[in-house]
Image (cartoon, rainbow, N blue to C red; front, side, top):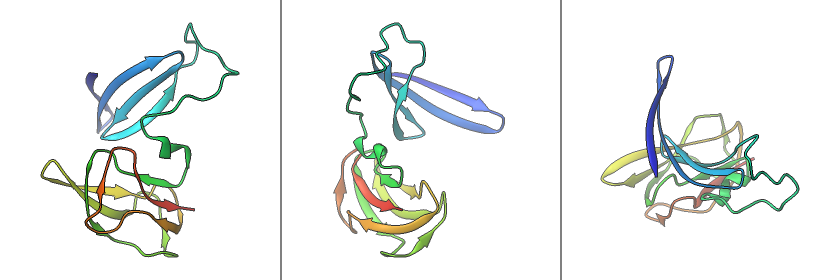
Length: 130
């Protein structure tokens, strides 16, 4: 995996670029996994079935996913609660550090799939905001 640090204005982004296959790249930006489509890639096949990503939960636009393996130490919201984009909805411990899990969108907490003390893997859905 190739690691880079980018700065755009005052923001710093730690980026890891993993597997690139056809026109899809597995990328981690600030510990959040993404599947990135590369336009104009030589082997791009626009009419093929989508390939599984490192974080399949990202297909659900309101999914709050574990960016790395760890343990949920706090759920800060309840089912049915209204939340806003980038609101801290849970805290997980990973590699002896606390990591805030943020809401990817404005909405209502539809599902909580991992409770306090749950062990999660990279890409596991912790909750769904809709």
